Length: 68
Image (cartoon, rainbow, N blue to C red; front, side, top):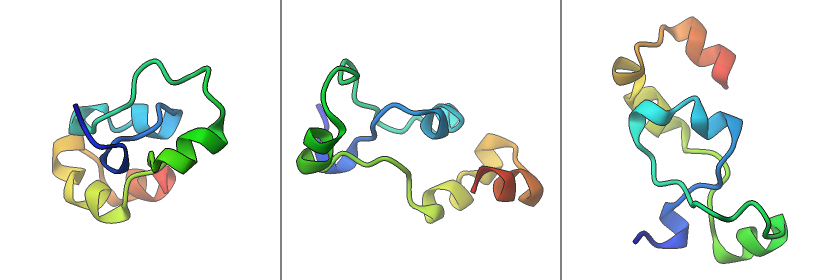
């Protein structure tokens, strides 16, 4: 179990980073976005997480810019 501030709301942006194995909240699709925000769930990972994981993702700088 992970604290809400350390988990992410499932989204297309997070699914593109599946290789990084970020903690994603499961079963939250029916809850209002305002409630998830109040809990502190993240919608997007920090840029540092993405740039540090570029090697794992196999991304070039061009792909990183496209993601951002």
